[in-house]
Image (tube, rainbow, N blue to C red):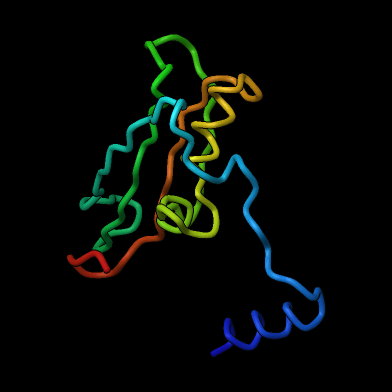
Amino acid sequence: MFLLIFYSYSLFVFGEEYVHGQDSHEQANVPKGKIIDFTLEDSKIYPDTIRRYSIYIPAQYKGEAAALMVFQDGHAFLKKGGHFRATTVMDNLIHQKRIPITIGVFVDPAYTGDVLL
């Protein structure tokens, strides 16, 4: 409910919805990186929790030193067609050489119990 109210308020105050730029859309000539998903189930620091994390490897990565970017609440940044589209933006900016080859780590919050939501 809060998000709906905030969204409606922001449209009223700012007058328009955010429109994604060109770098937020997949482009045919841009190599796509891959996402590898992992689950951490045996935390010694936070017992009885389970957490998901994903690693984005750019297509251009060949094992050399690379930059690293870490995202908290990672699932929100990985959604195809979502608000952030982080891996699509990273693919495009790396291809354009506007950022260096960058590995992304996307960490979700921990869930209690033994089932991921």
